[in-house]
Image: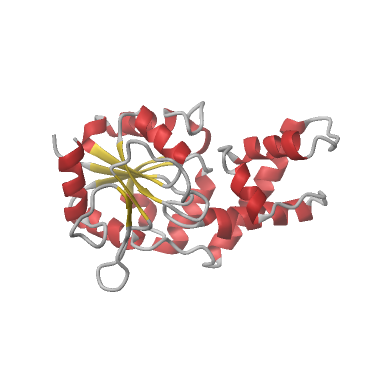
Length: 254
């Protein structure tokens, strides 16, 4: 088998959307709806253990605000999350959420090499569309053969549903692709689909466990001025994640 495709998570992997986008948007939504809630960065770190915005809201109420009275928690969570998504899209459109180091370059190199691209995420499609179009251009969504996002599958990460869905849509076996993730829940999800995974940590996930990862890096790196650091896995002569490095990882792990 040969490497044919790269499948990317979004939040925390392509951009620091959690800290710079979702957390800000959640708090703005709370304020706009006159809710006496405020999520600090420290609290949000803990809440990220729960994937999916609506589930996160309900977990917050159950765990941290049992005093909050509400006749229909599901309806409230849906309302808050819908407003939060609108605010997140607005934040993205202002350019306040840039892509992480090396992401745009890797997309360009992968396309030039003829590798197929896809997305597998638990975030809503509107968030994906906004991030991609406002960082890479209006045509960039066409770069991705499949965008698996939101509730297109019944179970969110750490379940492997979204990766199984993307592989099926692309008519690929797991040993023809590499997944890119940033979190413990993410690698559990990709591993469930038998995908080998490259991890780039962020401030929320740098202490997570990544059993089975091909390598754990601080970021994808840039060739001239920003080399990556290998946090876990074999050291390499490569200083950034390019096609040669991915082929090396693929050969060692498949």
